[in-house]
Amino acid sequence: MGNPVTPLEKLETIPRLTLAFAPTPVTELARLRAFLGPGAPKLFLKHDDYTGPGFGGNKVRKLEYVLSEAIRAEADTVVTCGGIRSNHCRITAALCAGIGLRCELVLNTPQGAPEDTASLWLDHLYGATVHRVSSREERGAAMAQAAEFLRRQGRKPFVVPLGASTPSGALGFVRAIAELRQQTPALDWIFHSTSSGGTQAGIDAGLQLHGLNQVKLTGVSADDSAESISSAVMEIRQGVGEHVGAVLGGPVEVDDSFVGPGYGLSTPECEEAIRLLARHEGVVLDPVYTGKAMACLLARVRAGSFKPNETVLFWHTGGAMGHFRAPAA
Ligand SMILES: Cc1ncc(COP(=O)(O)O)c(C=O)c1O
Image (cartoon, rainbow, N blue to C red; front, top):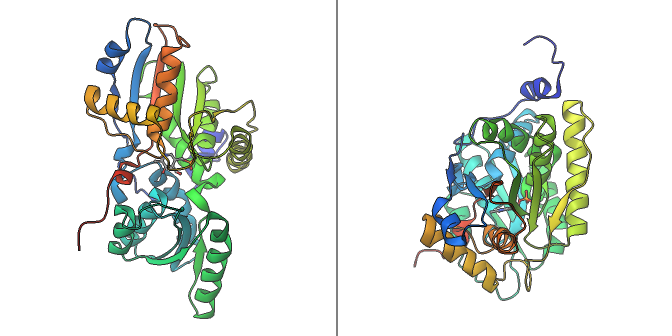
């Protein structure tokens, strides 16, 4: 390519690893729509639960860019963090194993959460070193400490922030919009689960860069307030703009009314959403992220928020491993 002139051409020049099994399929949720009745919009689902390594999920797209940065920094070890059933950590561990980097994970256990999660078991199986802390607040300092310890041993650590939600990680979702637009009719809405904000920032930036400003994007919070997630999304989105030479702005919609009692704690609406998608479509949502996001979409359909001729896409970001425990020893 000659000198990149547009932001999308610039994106093509930014190094990344090819790690995701993409394009991920898009399916129409016709049976769910029929169940919801005549007022329901056309419903589609993008299967980013099928992105491949580490049993798939939204993190693979982000890590294509972030792990490329780690390799260019000549790192030998990736250090990152999450909860004890973190999808991000499990996927990072799998990808590191596949590209020959060591992986160190700082994991916190929310009070009362099970210790024997399938994700933790897989983290060990993929060969990651696990450091345990008792709260979310301790993770940042524990990652810095682990990185410092590695440096003193002559190793080269590369710290990946929570959820790989950096502007370069979000570029993975800018690319995903190019993929999506080949797969669907014109969309009116996209719904997805949001937490550390990188997925939403990337989708939002991708829609703007592809001239799809008419598509309304709603992130449904898995944990934090709408205010704090939307300010994270705007900050990451601005960083995406700086990477590709574009000015990106506009409002960000985060709905935080489906979190229930807290992160990782189920709600009746979440359980209903998981059951409906399984029984009507054979699709498994997860109890921490996508179940709550789908609960929000279902509530809006039932409230008559969409017209029957509108088209809504639900972006399945993965996480079904959250249903499972480690195999018996
Ligand atoms: C399954 C799943 N869905 C959605 C999210 C939220 O994505 P993000 O952290 O990019 O906002 C995460 C990560 O935290 C996740 O693991």
